[in-house]
Image (cartoon, rainbow, N blue to C red; front, top):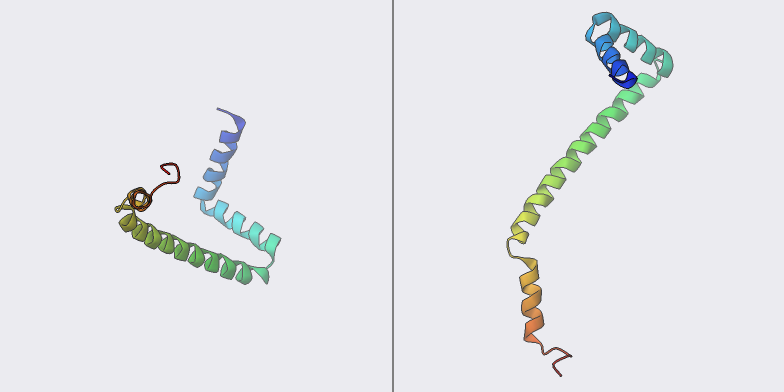
Length: 90
């Protein structure tokens, strides 16, 4: 085991206990201050909602693209080109 994995396991172990979570919360309050925590929570909430909106829009766009892909876009370009005489054929 490398040293990095041991540190990750230690952090997970700390967060599994009640006291570990309390200590982490106290450190967060001390670092950010009690006045900044509501702002931080609001920004995290808005970021989460924007992320969910983006995922929903991405799924909607993917669904619309899947219907358009069934027409094989390369086939229509070939058909348009074959209707016109090419410059090489003269």
